[in-house]
Length: 265
Image 1 (tube, rainbow, N blue to C red):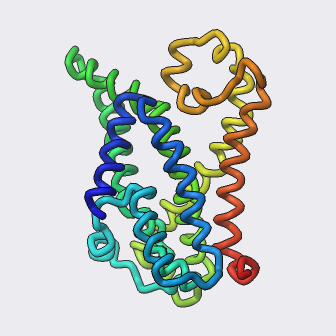
Image 2: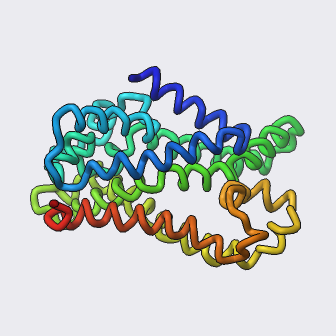
Image 3: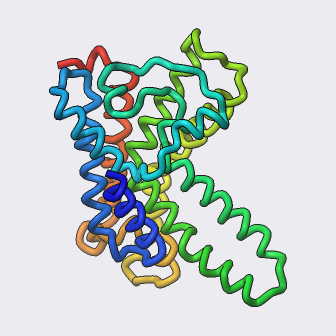
């Protein structure tokens, strides 16, 4: 299982470097994420089905490094109850966003380190440093980040909404450092998740001409959002598709996390 997860994670990093050469693979993984998270609906699943979906989630969530024990040691997370049995079986046994993100949180750390490198290297006079800075900036901002957010949207939604449970759970200590930090991470992710579809719905129709003109610089920055969309044929209306996909993931996550009694069929 670790080998399969490692293969997918490696492909993700390669995709970040090659910018889109494996886009079809990740389009398939994104569809699998929706399917896998349907197992969070509050229904009774056979044991073999639960095990299958749990293993599959490790692959589509890029969870390649065992991080639970490390996070518990570093942040001293308190024990928390899963929303339902299905959440526990699927690996969402905690309400803390950091713990539920698993290896994805490490990617956030790497992105933050890359951002720090860009800020620090901007004052460097070394031509070699500026060359590396240009490579990192081209790969990460903004295609790399947008691709990552797009491909992991539903996982980020579930992690964010689970972390909100801390706010009204009387058994979770609100003053604990690890709890506060995880809540800050969760709310930050939530703000990004809400802002992303709004950004796509407004910004890209406004720049439709650049897309139709195949503006190279614009494509280098934002191509991952529209490269599979037929903007020439459908016009600005085509950007409703990624917005709809994100809204569907957001609604599904909200239902299974906050209204588990109504997702019981």
